[in-house]
Image 1: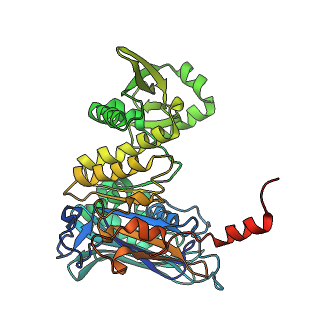
Image 2: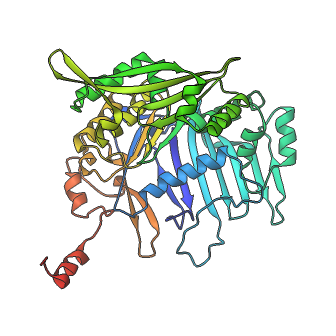
Image 3: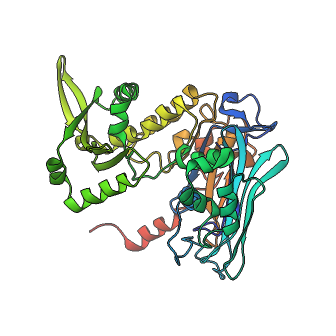
Length: 455
């Protein structure tokens, strides 16, 4: 679970802003099940957060900042390449450092991972375990102006980790990415294994235009998930009564007719040099290929069909490409609900309301909050959907706003920063501008007056 995330000098964030999911001590008696204990602390962390803001206010840049942290923690940079950061564009001095600090719970422990960087190098980096008010340093890294990397690693055990800490790694990538790319999992040790697994697997970031890459494969491997997804679509009045998945083995000749031969060769070469036993490739919505590594490689095509019972006793299968954008968007978000019901993870969904009806968005969050109580599970969303501004659904500290100042810099604030009554109609007051984070459209009226009506 994310406890807090701070970012500075990245995209629309100029000065440091902190997005905190620590439950407010000033809120009591409201949705108590939405908060779970932070390990070795008297505080609690929230299971949900909703971020509002006008178009261009920077709420999606919070999502992109977290995606940059995930990428920086896992992927090495090409030799001689920049760090890939995107500094605040309107600053007079773009040489100022960008900084990121992520506090999260993984495997029942609280960690902090962060770094500072410019275009050329990671200047500072840290990974610590937090226990109450104390921090146990796992490693700290500094890079001097000549590019020399120095690692102090009191929390890293094992010969290979110690040797790598002595070497330090490239200046343009994080030490965590160097560890992930250089060593095998057996060399990580308990702490790094928990941290890297959380970042790789349990931190799931879904952009507005992304679809779930291996939906068909998951359906074919998990009948319970297939039945859950079909039932949810049926209950959501999408017109879909159930889902059907067909998995059939195909020959190499058939595979070469679906993909260029050189691409097939590269995919197989990558699979043979990987530790993974399978590789997945999405051909289109509801159409996937699975490669299985065996002495005689096997190839499968998986197709998802939406079954519509248009008359009693009569049903018609449709390809997912024939379903509405909203139905496909909802289907691609359902792995979040299924995954969170069965395991601990964090899903950050940017623009959850994209193509979806307001009632479906409301019910999606309600379903999570009611069915996924307890455990270290969390959903964070950005949205314009004002119907979610409902204190019957969310706590005040679960509602956040992103707003730009006159310099174009994004600032974050929570509903707890305002003195509001428990019975306040939050949506109404938000649309009236009381909490900021809405567009002001006065100039459009002026444009209408100057341009006149259509001829």
